[in-house]
Structure formats: structure tokens, C-alpha cells
Amino acid sequence: MRTFLIFCIFLGSACADYYTATSDLEVLFAAENILVEKFDDYLNKVEQKQTEIKEFLNYVDALQAEMSDPEAYHGNPLNAIVTIRRFVYQWKHDVLEKIFSTQDYDDYKITIANELQQLNITMPTQDDILGAGSGLLRLQETYKLSTSELADGKILDRQTEAELSASDCYEMGRNAHELNQHQYAVEWLLQARSLNQHPENITQVSDLQILELLAPALNRTGNLKLAHMLNSEILKQQPAHEAAIRDNIYYLHEMLRQRHILTAPQEDQGEDGKRSEEKPSKPDKYELYRRTCRGELRPTARQQRNLRCRYTDNNVPFRRLAPFKMELLSEDPFVAYYHNAMHESEMEQLQDVGFGNLKRTRVGQNSTAATSSIRNSKGIWLWYEKNSWLASIYQRLEDITGLSMESGEALQLANYGIGGQYEPHYDYMSSPTNDWKGNRILTALFYINDVDMGGGTAFPYLPLLVNPVKGSVVVWYNMHSSTEKDFRVLHAGCPVLKGSKWICNEWMHEGGQEFRRPCGLAPERTKSAAYEA
Ligand SMILES: *[C@@H]1O[C@H](CO)[C@@H](O)[C@H](O)[C@H]1NC(C)=O
Ligand SMILES: *[C@@H]1O[C@H](CO)[C@@H](O)[C@H](O)[C@H]1NC(C)=O
Ligand SMILES: *[C@@H]1O[C@H](CO)[C@@H](O)[C@H](O)[C@H]1NC(C)=O
Ligand SMILES: CC(=O)N[C@H]1CO[C@H](CO)[C@@H](O)[C@@H]1O
Image (tube, rainbow, N blue to C red):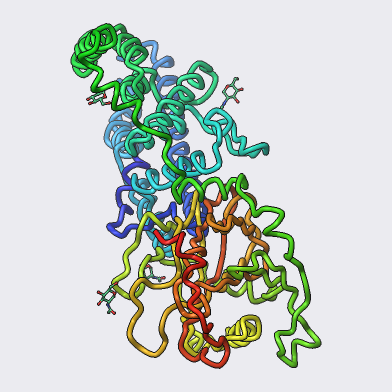
């Protein structure tokens, strides 16, 4: 109860979006450390008081035992003073005031408040739980992870340290239910129930609480029979449960109705007919995206025939001695890795700058851009003019791409957290601004750390999965050389399955490239028209 009060103090109005980046979670660990340490201090003080009070009680106990004849005892004037003093001082100050005083607790609160203020953190909220939960559900969906294996801390074929308790699983189920992902809700709640069967586990969730969600979730997946059965269990435990009584009527009624539909001839065919009409629809870009992230879709051998690794100097004199190691990933459209494109010290500095300074990344083109569930990451813009240490990266980008950075945007640093992803999108702007800079002609994406699992860059239409390689930059053109949009380069950031993902983006624009990337003579639209949405 008391710790809860402390948290209330710090529930600021600002939203920290803890689920969008892993870098922020580390601050929470620091905060928790403080809470534990200081609470320990507080408990020690309380314990000390208890010991003192106990000693006093023992002393009084012993006195009482000594007094075989109270009248004779109090006949001694010295003893009378001792007894009266006990009431005036000892009981009053040493026992009752000590117990009822909240001074230690107030001190504790103030200390904690000061220490946490120095960390400058906002406490996570229910929204963060929901965000982290939906991240996990996205991982399950994208990578087809089994609920029971996840709960055991198993991610694909790897065992991790993390293990979820019954109440964690319950929370996941509740999240899934709120997000209308009822099948996952059922799986997580069943998992919570089965963990509840081990009384030796620490669980803070009652079977009744689980059932209250499980029954409606089952109903939503269409499993009326089981929903009804579990609803009856609620009623067995709590015959006056209002919602369960109401739902019971619904389930019985609905089961009867369905039985009637199934046995009734002809006239209900309309409804059934509709269902049989539904054909398996063509996989949409999201399905292609998930399959590419899972590695199920890859370029064909024919597409890969001409892909080579080679050293290239891009005609930059300096690079004749220090050529780039280029790995061609797709010929047309051009997608390539350049390995060892960033130094260790640069990557460290970038992460240092990012740590604690990231803001939720926005989707869109200008200052009116909004945060969106399409992209859940945190980022920061680094302007070259203000960060002279970025000059060598600026130059390297020109050397790698052969394009001018004159019209390039600031470097964007981003960190993806739990289930962090960027749904399929194009980098070019649908309606570019009218200035000389024009549209985003090329994207250069640096991977500045190794991601434990997941977090690749998927091109569902190629189909190509580019796995993060620390220090490498992947480069692609968003537009044909005729300056028409290339619809084939739809791409996405696959959810981070384990670990954290740090990247840097540079978007180079059309302006100033006239002599560097000559325009194609013939329109090339036809190449990618089939992929236009
Ligand atoms: C604390 O955070 C707020 C908002 O996130 C920021 O405006 C402020 O400058 C920070 N203060 C310190 C001392 O870092
Ligand atoms: C059961 O699910 C249907 C839709 O699938 C919904 O309309 C109905 O309200 C649900 N009933 C209960 C008791 O949850
Ligand atoms: C930002 O872009 C939107 C369209 O995406 C446009 O309506 C708005 O005027 C732009 N704002 C600025 C400040 O450029
Ligand atoms: C999360 C957790 O504590 N799980 C344990 C629950 O109890 C079973 C049986 O003892 C263990 O195998 C789990 O590891």
C-alpha cells in the first residue's frame, strides 16, 4: 500500500512511452535500485523501533512478575514514581508515539522523491504495459511464436532467462483481449491458469479473475461451448456473480440458436452461402512482410545469380587505398550493403548521444508529423551543422553513394524497443515540398549495433530480408533514375525479437544530383507499376 502511494507521487502527466525503446528501460532499473535500497533503510529503522518496544514490553512484564504484593510495592515512594513515569514518558513517547509517528515514512518519501527527481524519470503507466504487451503479440504473430514456449522464456529455438509468472500471463491475456486479439487472449489466459496449478509459484491472480476474462474471450473466438462451461465454473465459485448470470443466459440462448440454424434446412443458406463464398484472399503486403521477416520468402536463385561481393572505390581517390566492401543484395532495384562503414567510436558516440535523449519517432514529412503505431521506436535528429563530429560520416555518405549530401536531411538516430517495428512503407514523400531539394531519392540505413534476434529490414516485394550487421550501411534508391517513384522498394523494419536495435537513417534528396545520377532517358515506371498500391 505504501509503495503504491510513492508511485502515485511520481505518476507525472508526461507520457514516457517506455515500450518504444529499450534504452529507457535501463533508467527504470536504476530507479528500482533506489527504491529497494531506500526501502531497506526504512524497514531497518522500523525494525529497530520494534526491537526497542519489545525490550520495553519485556521489562514491564518482568516488573509485573516481580510484584507479588502490589500494595507493598507501591507503598514504596520510589516505586510509585517509577510507575507513574512509565506512563508519562515511556508508554507515551517510547511506545505509542513511536508507533504512530510517520516521521520515518515521511523522510523516506522525501529522500526517494529527491533521488528519483535526479534521474528525471516518469513512472511507467498502464499504457506502457499495453504497449509492451501489444509488442509481444506482434512478435508472436510475425514470428509465429507459441504462447507456452514464450511463457517459458523460449524464443524460437533459444532458451532465455526470462520466465513469465501466472500474473504476467494473465496481464498478456488481458492486453490481448483489450486489443481484440481474442485467440491470443485465450492462449495466454489458459497459460496463466496452468501456471496457477503450481501453488509453489508466486502468483497474484485468482482463478476467478482468469475465468472472468477467459469465458468472454472464448466466446469471441466462437467457442461458445467452452465459454459456457467456464462461465458455469464462475457460477460454481460465486453463484451470485452478476455478469456470469447474465452471460450464462446469453450462451445458452446463443447455443440454442446455432443448433437451430445448423439443423434448419434451406432457409438459412444465405448466411452459410456467404461464408463459402469467401475465398482465401491474395496475400497482402502485411502478410508478405511477415513472411519475409520470418525468412520464408527469399530471392530466387535466378535473382541472386549476379550478386557478388566486391571492393569498390566509387572513383574516390582516397578510397583507392581504403575501398568499401560492397555486397550487392539486389541488382534492380539496387540494394546493397557497404560493410565496415562506421567506426566503433562513432557508433559508441551515437548511442551515447541517443541515450536518454530520444523522443518517440514521428511518421510523416514535417513538423506536423505525428507519432503512430505504424512505427514504434524512439529517435532524434542530428544536424551536421551542429555536430561537427559527424563530418566524416557526411563525407563517407557522399563517397559511398556518389551523391551530393547538399540536399540531404539530418541524420536520424533511432532505437527500437520490445517488438519495435516499422510497418511496410516507402521513404519517398507522397507530395514532396516544392523547393529545390525534391524527393527522397536514396536511403542509407546504418546498423549501429548487433540485434540478438529479429529487427531485419524486409523488402516484401523483392523479397529480401536484410539482417542487421553492426557497422554496415544498407543503401537503396527509392526512385528510378527517371525520377519516378519505384514501387518495388516497399520496405519495413521487422519487429525486434530479442535485444535492442539501434540504427541511423540518412535520406538524400534529388536536388543537386543532376550531374551525379543522370536521369534515365526512358521512363522506367513500367518496371514497378505492377507494385503500385
Ligand atoms: C527532465 O525531463 C524534462 C522532460 O522530459 C526535460 O524538459 C528536462 O530538461 C529534464 N531535466 C533534466 C535536468 O534533465
Ligand atoms: C460473444 O461474442 C459476440 C461476438 O462474437 C458478442 O456480440 C457478444 O456480446 C459476446 N457475448 C459475451 C457474453 O461475451
Ligand atoms: C506538413 O505537411 C502537411 C502535409 O503532409 C502540410 O499540409 C503542411 O502544410 C506541412 N507543414 C509545414 C509546416 O510544412
Ligand atoms: C514462473 C514459475 O515460477 N514457474 C514455476 C512454477 O512451478 C513449476 C513446478 O514447480 C516450475 O516448473 C516452474 O518453473
